[in-house]
Image (cartoon, rainbow, N blue to C red; front, side, top):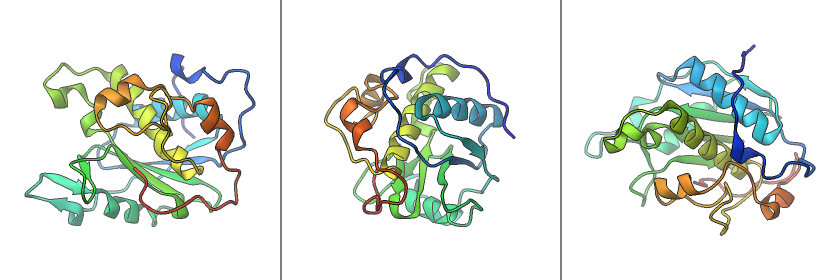
Length: 207
């Protein structure tokens, strides 16, 4: 059982008082060297934002076959495929947390990727770190950014597409600035569009 740290998540309260949809529990799976304390804090934020049960899954190694030396990056799809071996109940959503730089065909990089039919997604912490851009490390900023990207990818698993509202967590992040501008909550329109368990959640490969 995870013990969660109490953290103030100010941008998760935009839908306070609005009835939350019933969402499937989440299993967080560390892929590679992701600190247990970070996972616990991220789980706490997801519980506060989504009102769901969050469990910690067994760690997985980042598949080395996904690495492309010429780019110095990892293809995201093999990480999603690796999550298929993660033991989780069928009713749960699985979110991999990797600290490597990810990309997808046709894109220079991705902060994350989701496979809605399989109920699995992965996010990358690499470009969320201030030190990636030559700045001083900031654990709170990293955690806040990771929460937004985690909720975004889970939103795809819960049936949501991208949102034109730049403040909504489902807005597509073309850059880190987009992630910093948006909140960690669904806007009212996306909140009302979350699909209940059991419905088809769309095609594979949402980012």
